[in-house]
Structure formats: structure tokens, C-alpha cells
Amino acid sequence: MSSFFDALKSLKHSGPVPLACPSCGSVRIRQRGTLSGWLLPPVYSCQQCGYLGSLVVELEEIKDENKKEEHE
Image 1: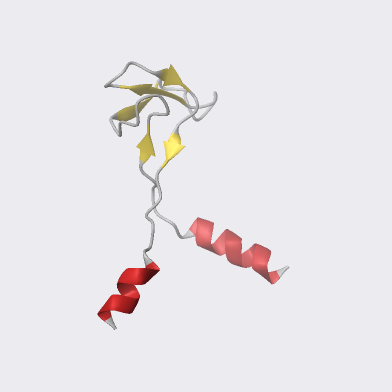
Image 2: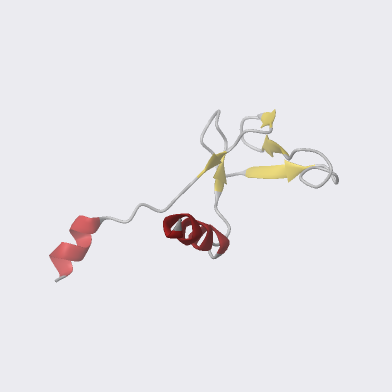
């Protein structure tokens, strides 16, 4: 049960995650509409390819363990 609470703590303290378009991979994606994400599910639009939808890709930083070992 403690691992569940640890997972919740890590989610709570993580910052905003960059979003990418699932169609072209661009990070030039914006949330549309005034009610989007509050009353209705969020709708995103890509400024590069014109994608419009509620599915986006969340980008995460990959921590390279090999770099840590090289510096030590």
C-alpha cells in the first residue's frame, strides 16, 4: 500500500508535462475552447499539421544512467 502512496506523491509534485501532437510530433499544440478541460474533455489543436482532437502525447525526460556512471 505504501508504494501506491509513493506513486501519488510523485504525481502530485511533478511539474507540467510538455505535450506533442500524435499526428506529426510537433510541440506546437494548444488547448482549444473556454470550456475545454473544465466542463468538457480537453480538445487540442496542432498549429503545424492542423490536428484537432482530445488525444495528445505527453513527453517525459529520459534519465540516462550511463551518463551518471561516466561522470563518477
